[in-house]
Length: 558
Image (cartoon, rainbow, N blue to C red; front, side):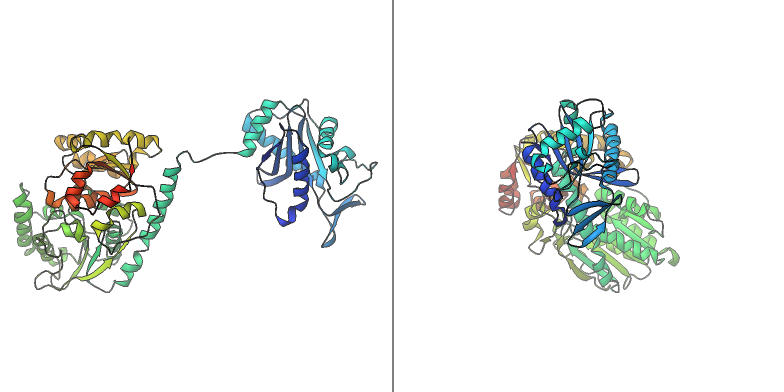
């Protein structure tokens, strides 16, 4: 049967005449011919359309303009009689000629070869009978097909091409095939999954910006704890809150603990044209910026530095103190850090504080079982506002860690791709996780969409940056510049995300913190999550909370 483009055209109610001619030609043309419907061609700013186009290998081409109703010519002008009555219409031969010329120019540009094959311009009137002797200066009778001619439609088209078609030769089969491919204009997403992921992530971005409604609803509250699970848009809200306050000329500090998150916050604020916070980044950077001397050791950072900052704050001029404190991943801040920050504000008891936290990501256990940030001694408490919607992960990823995040979490993203599981021993986890990267790139993921996160020892590439002391100068800048795949640790990736995360479960330094680490790692992926490790170790860490979720994951051998 003749090759049709498209295979099954959709004819509107006003195209019944075109449908009738299409059916006649579809049934009568030879199998090697091509029949195309509604070929639209743009020539400069002008749009043309060929109602029906025939490619006939060994013969030539025919462009057909179809006119329904009863058609006639009076005093050289064309008219049409239909349900609306009699009315003038454009010259059909002029229409088909203009469209054909535009098509010839377009196909020559596409193929790099001029179209010199015989090409007939035909007017078809499927409901009108025209005398056999009729002719018009620009329209020989052989180029007009009436109701009777359609009974032998293929024969009539062939005669029109061979006897009236302009051109020098028959249409070569190979050239007909090339033209056909351009008419069909077939293309398919090279990587369907990654295309769907981009759409899902656009939805996630849209949902996240809706959290501005929540910020607006709480704008009159000066001290708030926004409590939400992973993927609820807390970091976006923290940055947006800082922008709002800075725009009002308030002295704002936007704080976090992790280096990676600090670099991210600086990048976001760096793009602003308006007023910016007084400080953006890590708490310890702020202390140093005010003159607290540097030191080493965990005791220095956890105890001595905040004490020295409190003492320095006593001498800090009022004009240099902060109007507002915003802390992202606030559960990471020890009570002593909060006290030091409050001492740097103009009103430690009643001043503005906005803490964005996930109590189930309390991986550093700095609050000894207390509710992080619930109170600060005699200072006014922070009003708890719960942010329950998960917006940054697909539903399949969110369902994986839902039991770890709490029943209140409500996945709102798209369905997404199945989670994958690579089963291996803990000793082999790093090697097999590394082997996942290249196959993911072959699937269509860009290397800068992929992050590989370990739960115990650093990945060798991460370790090399650590040994060379390039964490600040090269490691994190490369991540935020989206230059390449990223190799990190779950603890350093809190508050961050990538489209694809390969979670390498290569053991735990402290099994009592394994649940929190897995929760962080599982929730960093926006579109595709790949878990690599030993299910028995994961079961040991989480009991049955993850077992069912990973049991439904797709086994994968990269």
